[in-house]
Amino acid sequence: MNGLRAVVVCLVLACAAVVPPAVSSAVPAPVPVPVARSWSVLPVPAAAPPVTVSDLAARGPGEAWATGYEHAADGLRPLLYRWDGAAWSRDATFPGAGEPGRLGKVRFVGEETWIFHNRAGAGEILRRSAGGWSAVPLPQTLWTYQDFTAVPGAAWVVGEDDTGLKVLHYDGSGWTAQSVPDGVHFLLGITARTATDVWAWGDTGTGTAVLRGDGTAWRDAKVPLPPNSNVHTILLEPSGRVTITGSQYTEGVARTYLMTRNGPAWRTTYPPLGGDTYAGAVVRGPDGALWLPVRSDRAFQSKYARVDGADGTRTAFSYGLRRTNAIDVAPRALAKAGKSLLSFGTVEIYGSKPNLMSERLGG
Image (cartoon, rainbow, N blue to C red):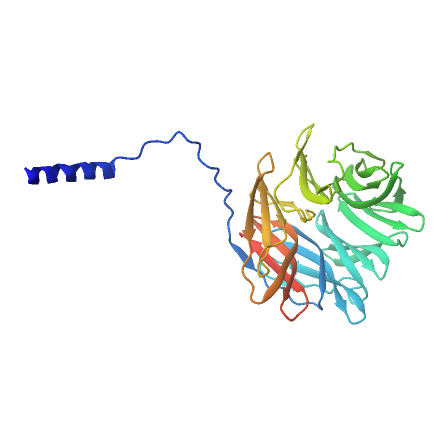
């Protein structure tokens, strides 16, 4: 009898082991958005530290340009680097490469590459074609050059001189000065989708405003920005979608906002990026999500945020590779290069000043 009881107990235990547990009626916890952690380090020829990075733009997987300036013994010197799909190299063949100055935004205009150049205080646009480099000088020297953009058929430079705000427009043959609506004190940035669809942002007597131009005249775009906010950048996409990033200040505390318009209405969200995040380097990645560098909580690794979803709250973070003895890894710009993301910025190794760094995700 005892033997039979032992057999029955064993059979019950065996059945319990193979019977699946009862299905729970509880709602499962949200699954974090997966982020590929396959960043690779791309060597960059060193410059004279400390180095400042201005911009990064890619035409495709085999061509990207990064700009900035280095601190040489006799002052600031312009920096230009080219990515050929395999490696970064320094380009010093453009006009004024060995003179004091700095480089700014990069834009692709047809088959050409256009770059803003502050050449010892005078502004010009560098143009690279199949025949090499040439320069288009501005019609006047400004005290400050805030921003530059270019598309086929048009280019703009915004800045200030002793008379105030200046918006200089180039139509391919010459320059004209354009007027902005009354009350606009200065412009901080400008970007364009086409020669007849250009956007700018800046300061007015009542706060930050977004302007929109048709190539000839400017008007208030009537964007319902959050109260007490500024604008970091405006991302214009070929589909017609518009994305605005900035910071909103509430009782002295800043939080990053993201506004999107993919139709007639604007939608504002607040991704959890940290209050001190500057979202000026946001790009649309090859995966369709928005990517931007953020302040890292690890001194030896870069950190990037991936923002996805209609509500802008599906945010995940991705880290670059560990760097030996690094005390600050700071990517400053991102660009979509085919099926990969390129980053360009600075890294500070213990005992030295910040120099150049680059990383790639995918590709």
